[in-house]
Image (cartoon, rainbow over all chains, first blue to last red):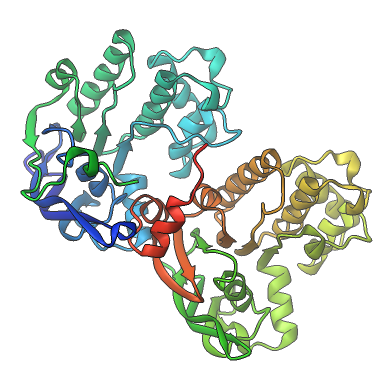
Amino acid sequence: MTSSQPALRVSNLSKSFTVHAQGGLALPVLRDVSLAVSPGECLALVGPSGAGKSTLLRSLYGNYRADSGSIRVRQDETWTELVGAEPRTVLDVRHRTLGFVSQFLRVIPRVSAVDVVAEPLRRRGADPAEARQRAEFLLGMLGIPSRLWALPPATFSGGEQQRVNIARSLVVDYPVLLLDEPTASLDAANRDGVVELICQRRDAGAAIVGIFHDTDVRDAVATRVHEVIPPASSPPASLAGVSP
Amino acid sequence: MSGPVLSAYRVTKRFGGRNACRDVSFDLWPGEVLGIVGESGSGKTTLLNCLAGRLVPDGGSVAYETRSAGIVDVHHLSEARRRLLARTEWGFVNQDAREGLRMGVSAGANIGERLMAVGARHYSEIRGQAIDWMARVEIDADRLDDRPTTYSGGMRQRLQIARNLVSNPRLVFMDEPTGGLDVSVQARILDLLRGLVEGLHLSAVLVTHDLGVARLLTHRLMVMQGGTVVEQGLTDQVLDDPQHPYTQMLVASILPV
């Protein structure tokens, strides 16, 4: 493995939100952020609430549109630029290289937990039976009782939904993983299971960027820390979360 | 890599001197689902009808890459060619299933008719495929010989979907496919469409005013206001980080559940 070569490289990334309902109020959030993550590394984003950690992570996934700068992901031995990329380029990178664990599961009506988890694998052309098996394995590992696997997760508890979400994002061995508070609503036992999974992925060569408020979790998974600094003209914390 | 399935170039349509849609350009790639969102009167249905050859635009062009005959200009085909294309390589799912179905013949005939358009001749084979598709859209096979007039709204919509997809189209146009249906019926159809679009690797253009439907079914979004596209991009990006004042207003108007 060419571990010296980063898997994700961010340079001079800037992002602001313009709220038209507030007369075009501009909220700068990220200014000139640069970082690089190599396979086997886990970079923890730290900084005060409202500093823009989640905004940075969502920008890296292409969920938020960067104003300027560069986000490059290594795929097929070349760099793919995500800033200003065509939607199908971003989707291709997401299918094959870039995984994201958000804080909340977006529930799809009528789709069972096991199918929610297996979907990213099936979309990559995996055999449906194999995809299902792998999904069941992950759900089991994350402590979701097997009697729930065939049910749609809409009625699950917050912690169960979050674990389904984690299983869905880890069902594919993504070379680059973005984790937004993956253990936020979990109890100690389930938290440990998630930490173990993240460490496995890291040690298997995934390049990881994450937000981990729980310092025990951060100490267990992170190999480095990146401080996100609020821009000088930072709005009060109550306004910084204005992104929808 | 193959080229776009459908290319719109500066498509413009005027009704009585007013622009219903103006200068709309985009490429639709294989396997891509493009959503067109906007309020009533934004021009999205007019655009869809221009794309599908049902309306002749006043300006611009629409190119479609056929399965075997290369790229054609949708609006310069003979009426017969265009109809053949619409029956064999395309699907069109109307909001009102009654417009997309033949209400006077059985459900089985509604599905079988499309198969015959693509050359199927053996009755037992056609019937077998019709039964298979009834199951795929979750309609009991014993309703095969009933007319759609005896079906509920949700069943009719599922039958319309089966009629459109049975002939294995490359490209499907959908106009508010879940509009006017109860929420639980809507969920079932959304789930069905999601599975079919993904499983059959369809390209699709979906018109909806419902941003939840757009999020579930589409990869990319175009936001229309007053006949023009004011914003476009990846679906989750447009909905989670809308840039244009109109898109921000639309997203902010979603009622939380």
